[in-house]
Amino acid sequence: MPIDPLSRTLSAIADPTRRAILARLSRGPATVSEIAEPFEVSLPAISKHLKVLERAELIERRRQAQWRPCSLRPEPLKEAADWLERYRVHWEAQFQRLDQLLDELGAEEPDTPTGDRKEPL
Amino acid sequence: MTPHGNLKVAARGDLEIEMKRVFNTSRSLLFDALTRPELVKRWMYGPEGHSLPVCEIDLTVGGALRYVWRLPDGTEMGMTGRYLEIVRPERIVHTELFDEDWTGGETLVTTELYEQGETTLLEMTVRYPSLEARDRVIESGMSEGVAMGYDRLDVLLPTIAVT
Image (cartoon, chains in turn orange, green):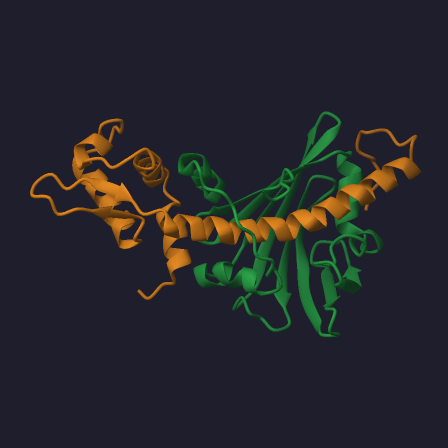
């Protein structure tokens, strides 16, 4: 399925095991068995996760005979984070104005109790 | 670095974006600020220089909403939706569809307000009709570029995605 790189990244990291694998690799390269060690899932299951990450170009594996350590490719993660950061900045700017508005409204109604009002819509 | 507020944004599954933020106010006042047109117009007008000249809200189940933003160059951007659930002052579910329909269908917005002592936690989940639509959302007026530092990717990861 043709899919843009950002979608592929977000899709790949939607899984908690894969995020944990990436977090492990952010501390340095590791072999498949080293990666699998802290998890309670089988080695083939870990291999499957690694394939997804490799297809998403989030990790790379060197061809060193049997040993093939995996290492992190951080660029796609940075792109995904940048993308979400733009979303965050857009909304945070609006929410800061909302903070201000709420302050003003709160000052206008100093006697309003903090509990919810009971009147219907 | 960028002046960070306390808003948390994360991708959730393939279709959703989840936002969480705490407001220093009561739940009922925040609910009003999210649903009363004269109040919504004062903060939800988009980037500086934009405005929200039209904001119509029929806050009933099945009721319609209509927003029109005006950009600095005079261009207008309209959005229509309807309310599916209203539980005052804690939950609103509504649909949104831009006139230009760049998302290829309606988005579904679930807004939940939780009392936390003197403050209120806002959780807003936006569900897009497709993966591509979710990823395209930024191009529609959220164009401010931002650079982040990435010293600790393991810290960064949970900020990008939740399940």
